[in-house]
Image 1: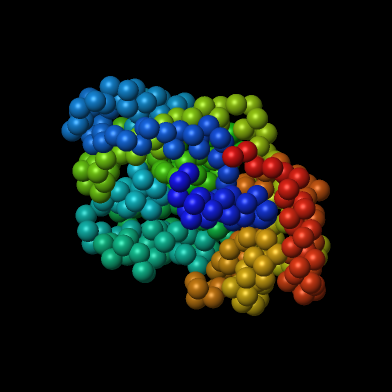
Image 2 (image 1 turned 90 degrees about the vertical axis):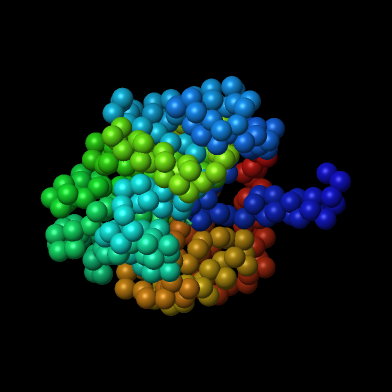
Length: 404
Ligand code: DSN
């Protein structure tokens, strides 16, 4: 690279990724193949329109059409979908994808019901500062403050009272399994669409380690860059009868030209999720999360819901999460501060979210989980020397080289 300033910054960032323990539940490390496809000449083209409809607004798309159709085919195979499901692979990322689904299924001013951010929901599930709450009347459900679990009876009560047009299930910080069947039953009772946002758990669903929402939803959205270990993007699945509405909402409703390089990288991602080692990887993510959760508990940490069934856990610190996040960052351990049930200030919440997808990709296993729990304890409880622990962290990370 001729640009030495930028080259130097990129090198530093790659080095940072190698030398830190990444416990951010939504991040991961993609394969060299995916990196290559995203940075390939596939980036150079406009293809507004859809391959499935044989309707593009630019010439020269004969190969992109094939790539987009291949990505759609693989997406359907991965989630074992029949002819009654339609797939749109053009969404730029999770937030636009959710808004596109709402745009397709609701009129402005209709009632949207989603999980509150403070309980583990996403901004686009109706948080007050998000476009979703500006465009729609929002009703938020939460978790039971004592158990930390979704209170399905309360979800039903709210749904019956406010009659939403769309009910969103799915979360960004919920450590337990989600009962999509229950959400579907509630949605049916009030004649609402059930939309499942599976961004955080899609890899577990692909490998049969979590209930699939497809039997129970009208539309499903997943990002591809989290536990699925693909490029930064999203996929929208919907029942066939909603296909035209969803496609129109994505393009021309909200987006212009699709990112062809990313769509091709999603096809590669599904090639990788089909390999036997992907299932082993997903199982190890859960094992690692459980060992980490147990180790933290033994050291006296209080976990929301008492543990985890999936790839993440929430520590209730009963103190400032921002301070804890900063202390850990100083030694090269990244875990984002997060609201815990009852918190009201998202910028200064009192929890930490800890996830295992990225460190499991690095190759870390149970033994390393115990070590990480001990470091968290030594930093947050014992206030030990940061320099000493930073060196220990770096030494461990260098034993698990990233494939760039
Ligand atoms: N920012 C993602 C997460 O951390 O879960 C959700 O979009």
